[in-house]
Length: 357
Image (cartoon, rainbow, N blue to C red):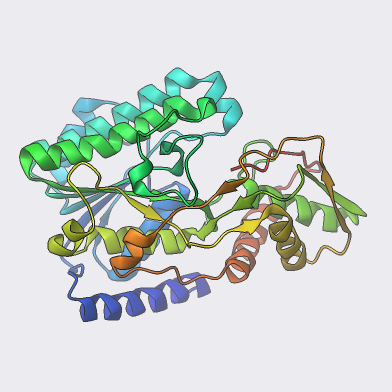
């Protein structure tokens, strides 16, 4: 058994003990669970957690099942009859992709969500968890971001179509709950990192971009690493395995406990650490983790993005969940994963990318 799987096993055992003490339901080995999007960063983390649980895991690749095809999705759900569905599938991309292909982002995400949620209802699947995004909140949202801020102001225009689709996913879940008494829940993660992250030089997120950049600088003995902006904006980061544990926790919450902290038309739950850090501090930790010994410089002519992005996770904390992975520990694990997976495939060039995730 790998170290990653051993660590996951320990976390699962701790979570089970905590949930048993709080009176929450637990998974059974006979449970059939479908993870839509199991090859993605979050979906694969959920699948790893569920494999340790020893339940019956159901997955399909895009080639095997087109989630934008209503008939295929309905036939699949009807045939498999899962006890639970984790809806982690989505079309995702950076600012450039969202600006270039807005129709693709809104159409494909709306279809994936509508097809799976409606098929779940049609085939009497009672439990589903939808994964959204922090981009559902207004551009000028008060920090830290509370669930109540949803639909109170205009969205960030660069990824508005994607955000609209994610908001629709929340409202689909709530509407099926209200009209058909389903138990469809939604979680909104903060910035994620860890195994399965994308290290593409142009389309990666802030942590994966910095890990790659500092590693390549170390390999080339570069005297400096230049980062866009002033380094002063604050960001929050959550290790993806903690996100997976939070998803399973929320999915299996006792319904009375869940309803105590949610409302029928305000039911989504933020998932974060409750802690943020400046980009400068983050860069210093990643420099240490990767073993880079050069200087860090900041190109202050480049934009910073929002000054702060922090989720208010009080609702989830009240429901008995806390993250387990400290940032430096998680960054070490992420770097180990990066070396194991990406080192043989690295290109010779690293490019600057905007660090406002």
